[in-house]
Each structure stands twice: as structure tokens, then as C-alpha cells.
Length: 122
Image 1 (cartoon, rainbow, N blue to C red):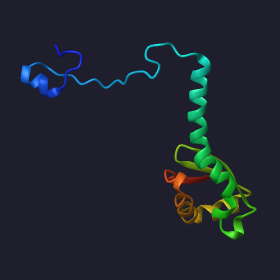
Image 2 (image 1 turned 90 degrees about the vertical axis):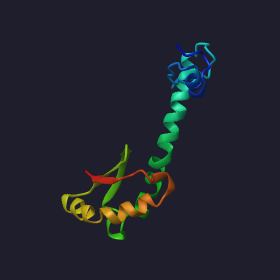
Image 3 (image 1 turned 90 degrees about the horizontal axis):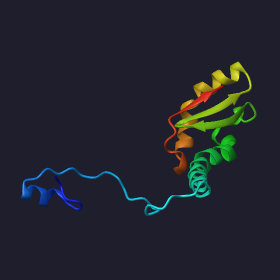
């Protein structure tokens, strides 16, 4: 049986089995964390993810579009690596789908939006 703070070299020397530990020690050092602190940690992580691509796209959406589509399309949201946008009409949606690649190039050029892979027009 491997010892507590063993490593692969010492275990090989002793001819004992070695199983690496993949867990990390808790930041609280074994002390239970309060639900308030847990909520703060969760919302901080949530706001960091949301504040990146979502807020930038919401503010600059019209600058990514060709000039003839500025009033015909609005930004709806981002989920995983997909941007959702609402088109004014079916014909506008069809024309926007033709321009999807050029719009996507402008979006991916921004550092916070590099993980976006496609645009869905609703």
C-alpha cells in the first residue's frame, strides 16, 4: 500500500504500487463553508462568465452587422458557443444567414468572444 506523501519514483524503488491523487485540498482547510459564502463564490463565477461575451455583444451588436441590417436584427443572448439573434422578418433572417460568416469573423476577432462558433437567427 502506498504511503501518504509518496511519489512514483519512491514507490518504484520500493516495488510498491502507486496511485496518484487527483484531488486538491479544500480552500477552507476542512472547515465547513457557509451558504452565504458559497453563493458569493457561485455568483462571482457566474458574473465573470456572463460579463465577458454577453455584455460585449449586447453593447456592440450593431457594429458587427452590415449597415443594411442594423435595424432588422437584435441580439438575444449567448449560450455555450452559440449566439442567438432575432431577425425582424423571414426575409431578413434569410439574408442574415447568408452573411453569417462575415459577422462571425468580426465577433471572433474580439478576445472575449473567441469561443463562439456559430450564430442562430430566430
